[in-house]
Structure formats: structure tokens, C-alpha cells
Length: 293
Ligand SMILES: O=P(O)(O)O[C@H]1O[C@H](CO)[C@@H](O)[C@H]1O
Ligand code: HPA
Image: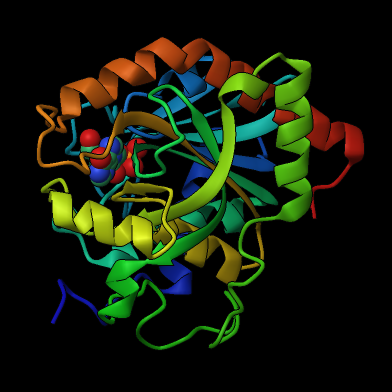
């Protein structure tokens, strides 16, 4: 039904990739970061970086999307050991859903406790502006409604439960921490909270689809993150996620606007510096609160 839908990576495959990585770097990451489209600069903030091209990592898929460099970078952020995906995988690249989410299981075996995911998204909420940063409080998993869920297939209890809860997917303490940090940094004017909806892509949404998604309760729409969140929660890591609103979803037949990937990458560049400060300050506070678990 879906590409290689029943064949994920085994626990042993993930373990051997994690062992290979740990044999090449002294960094034992506590925080895992995923960079969204055009947000790869987050990884450039890591101190004493050790970087691996995805093509050199055993079992790793390759990045095929412009704006996703395809490197796994280890290093420290404000003294905290981190690993950063400079480029993620998407369903529309043709990978099985188990493959695009496999890095979350590698994170877990590496010792990561908290995952911070970022993405570029179209704003459906009419109050949102391009350049706003939305703290994700919940999601709508549209591919999941059609049966395409990354946990499909045999369940390995070493990763987690057959039926994991998702009502607490986005850690509430971390959402509050991000609001506090955003306020201290003077970012409150462009910091929002909302519901992220994932679609398969790669075509952008029609006007009717955007209207429908907004009516269903989505504030932003994109083509990533949710699958990673499900797998990260399944194996017990804490999750914080945010969307950069890179474009306004077109909701009006009189509009001349057309969604395009160049605009998405451009907006990422404009907000890069603030995004990096927000994420690195949150990471530093994780240490302060000692709230890794
Ligand atoms: O979600 P990220 O990886 O940030 O990328 C977003 O930007 C791309 C579309 O411009 C899509 O891949 C969408 O999901
Ligand atoms: O408008 C969008 N739709 C879907 N994915 C996206 N990623 C960035 N912007 C968008």
C-alpha cells in the first residue's frame, strides 16, 4: 500500500548505526534537534562540531530536498551535548514512513532525552503573519487517518508500547519554557501557539483544502514533523516542536499569492538568528531546570 510499509529498521540495525556514530565522536548527546527547511543554520551554532554526511552513515537515507544539507552534526550548545539533523526526510521523497523516522530511534539509542523539532509551515490561522514562530501544542495527522503511521508493522517493545498515547505528545512544561524564554528575548510579538497539520505533499494545498484544514482546527500546515514526533514519543523522549510560518496559506480565490519553496527558504533566512537564539536558550534552560527526563 505504501513504500515498503511493513519493513522498518530492526532494533539491531538502529543499534549498529548508533554504535558506529558513538565510535566516531566523544559527544554523548542529551538533546536532539531537527532543522526544518531553510533552518540548517541551527546546526552551525554547535560548538566543537563533528559532522557526518548522511551518505557516510550506515543505514541512513539521503536528503533530496533543497534547503536540507544532509548532515548529522554533534557538538555542544551552551555547554549541552547535542546532535542536530541538518536536513530531514519527508514522505514525498518516496521513503517508507519507517525510514524517514528512523533517526528518532537513533537519537534514543544515542541517549537523547529531549527532541526539539523545527519546520517551515504555511499559516492557516488568519491572525498569523509570515515570520511568526508557532509553538506546536498538538497535531492533525492526515496520512495517519489514511493508515500511514510510522508505527505500522510489528512492534518492538524495546522501543515502546504497541498503543502509545498521543494526547501528551507535546510536552507542556517545554511549551511554557519556550513562552517564558520568548518573552525574555523580546519575541512575544511574533511567538504564537497552535495546531500543526501534516499532509503528504509535495504539492502545496488547494484553496479548498486550506479552508477545510482551518475549519478542522489547524493553525499551520506542512509536510513533516508529526511522524517524527510519534516515533520520538513512542520511545519515551520528551518533545518540543515549533513551526516557522514561512508563507500564508492561500484561502481566497481573489488572492494572487502562490505558495512556493523559494519563499519558504527566504523566510527561514530572515528569522534564522532569532530562531537560533530561541532554541539555544531553551536548550540552556533544560540544563538549568535539569528536566531532561
Ligand atoms: O517541514 P520542513 O522540512 O521544514 O519543510 C517544509 O517546507 C517544504 C515545502 O516548502 C516541505 O518539505 C515542508 O514540509
Ligand atoms: O504552505 C505550505 N504548505 C505545506 N507545507 C509547507 N511548508 C512550508 N509552507 C507550506
